[in-house]
Image (cartoon, rainbow, N blue to C red; front, side):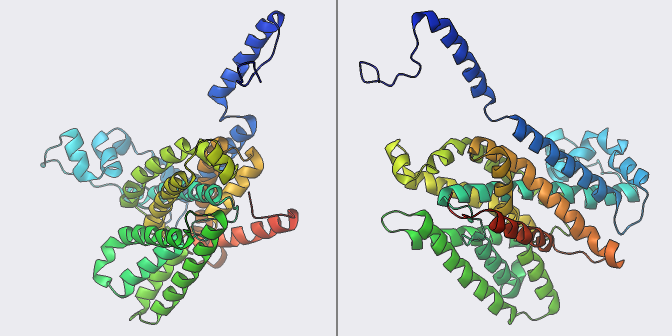
Length: 403
């Protein structure tokens, strides 16, 4: 401590001043690049490689037969890439494209060749949706694990996924005329469930253990109600649709889903990165965080809202995809450490890598193994990956739970 009671950061003599200054410079440089280190860079490159390899498979193969060359000529079709009206009609939608580019109503979007139509309207947007869903689920799980200080926390454990699933089933079975509102009802259900969890856990404040226990209670009740609602389904197609939503599926994902999930993904990522410092402080414990001047409950609720936003955005387009929010933060934490400034960035790469590669198996697995055109919900594949991984963690680590 200094004479005035302030903390002395670097005690050195005059003769060592220059050395001290030179020592500060690297720390400043580390400040600029503290989110990047060799392990994080390697993780990002490996994950990007997996995503690109999965993109190659998704674009090249499918039930409609075309050669790999034809598929990639279709993806790189000059009629689309050289015409901003065509490109923006995919990205923004035709109506918004006309507004942005001041395109008259007399202009008609040209018909695409069959290969181009299949690649651009079916295969390519599915990969993009998988990337965004993977990002959202990964950062949602990472935030929930920090907020509850429990590495077993995830949108599913805290009731968010189950609440969304219940809302989906209610819409399909009871309010079938409102099927077009499924994304909205899913998001509302997830949000409502977490509000109930927070209310149950509240006792002059919350605690990590009360949040997890309340989440388990709400998730159990919602799952039981989902099972009961299956008994009221009038036809098999409703049950199949409900199963696809509650197990998580990217079948039929299109540009409408991309446009729906993209803005919320960007918002959730920005808020999550901005809150990474607060997440690090929360990991120090409530008393320490309070002593550092943090309003623990206010920050915890705000960060939970970001996690819900990310989870709801993914559920709205892909249903309930399990295990991604649980596994990815573990994988990233093992490689880059527990600093959330790095962990969040790692999640943004590993989440898409896991989900896009799992979707390759979900889409083409039945075709390769059984010569069947049927597709599996991607949530089944992530469950098959996540179960053994957690068994591995339990066998490897003596303590698994509190961060």
